[in-house]
Image (cartoon, rainbow, N blue to C red; front, side):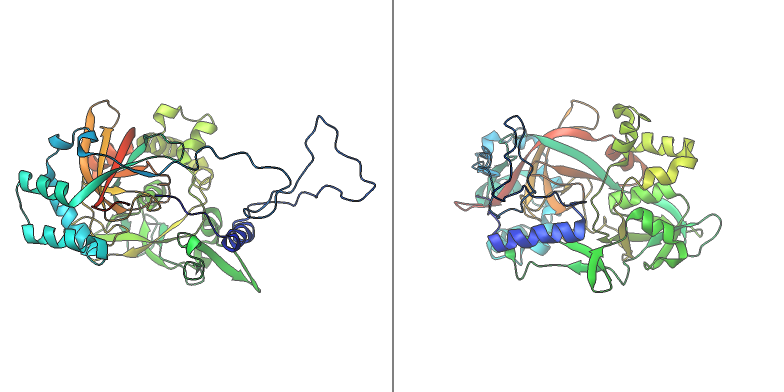
Length: 417
């Protein structure tokens, strides 16, 4: 599949939006003089130039893009999937049926999902394998540079302590979506920008970036975001935001499930990387447990740590169901079989075969997954986030998972993906 280039008008609009809303440039570099009396730059120095938006005339020939011809999906045979015949596909079947609740609305998936429905809830291993191999084709996922490996991390559904009312014990707000936050979507007018969602707010007659985490925290009771619940621990709340969903245990022992509703539009910055850069933690200890330990040993620097990440997640209350949390596809996630992906390469809902290793080990982990979720930090072709489920044990696995892996997306039989 060839990646489409942005049209010139869309490129210019994207550049203008990036500069105006995302504050990409702090200042403007003066253009070189063009008058007849201007002196040329010395040969040893490059003449200064303003950074150009994509699609605008350039003053010098661009560096050739040697990776432009690399296809992100390349058709392969089933024998090229390592461990394909060793996976227990019956464990992935319920997740596939969940995906079909969304995929069946798409023409190209209708026949596949109708066939899956006809097989029922519990077909045998051989039946599932024959069904998949006859209805789908494997496509190897490739990075823009042609490599086949990428980062596979883990996530889970945490449980934190909280309450409905603010108190000395429950002092950290869990916010819903603020009423004054704008979502700017140009996808209908500019199809090339359909994956771009900008967040902003109105100041006078201008749209400016929405508040950062530090700014929102500094507002306290003046925050425009409503408070859904109050958390007992700020670092637990931060990691709940990182996971994107979770449960809040109330004082009476009951719990409330909350899920991702929106985000403030600022890019996610890893607080683990910040601690490493500050010399506070070695890289091998910058795990979730390591970060929590540092935070509790350095309470006076907690705000500095959290505010190093300007991104802020807003939640909504979810129905109390027995299944997993709802992912971006709109269906419940399945522990050990749901994967968060970058939908620019891998379509949401599609089966994905994953070949990686178990957390913090070299033990092979090869299984059929379903692309049912996305994430702010899940960017890139060969990039996945493995959903481990709910609770402490799942959190332990997710917190130490940072492996290299390969991905194959399974798509309905077609000459092109």
